[in-house]
Length: 278
Image 1: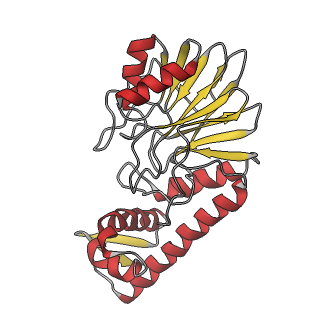
Image 2 (image 1 turned 30 degrees about the vertical axis):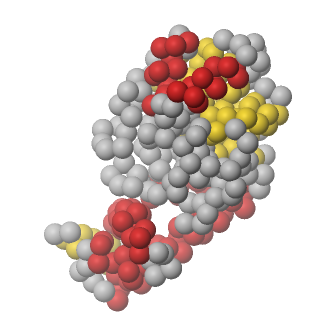
């Protein structure tokens, strides 16, 4: 993983009708914190209100300056969605997104009033947001295309300055790369991530991620060919020689995602927890 940039200002007007608040939850995994976006002027939609942090919830409501009518989430990981149900109770806003899948590290408190499907739209007098189902980092991950700006709000599908962990079984590397390629084909003007700054060169950013993932996949293949019948944990030092050993636990999850992709591509197989290249 590469590092994030310096901490951002807590409130930023990105363009008329689009503002960003940064939740005070900085960490190695969240960078400066989770980005919360506010759309509209007379009626407000909130995207990814983040974890339940009272001062952030207060900042969202005090900054809105108008009734909050809708709350959307990109996915139900604990740094993006838990505040949604709390904010909805306080404002009466409609919750919009995809329900949490079964599994660890999912926010089961998020129960959407409106379940999104790919291509669904939220239309107001001030904006139109179109949902784009982008599984990979999470099976219920949704990006949102803001039509007037041709910006795509990417949650954790693409973030600024780093790569994301693909953690099976809910995370899926094959779906992730397919979703990235679909996003690239849209020709959007900018990517607006869940962590970090606006990305104004979308194609270059996406190409870098795909190339990085495929280069890592090549290392997995080479390691399997040289060291058959190893477990993912045993394979980590062969594949992630460039990664600090402190991060080997996370690396093992991404390695498993690569192995599963190779299995789906009929290039590898697993027997009793040990992997071989076909």
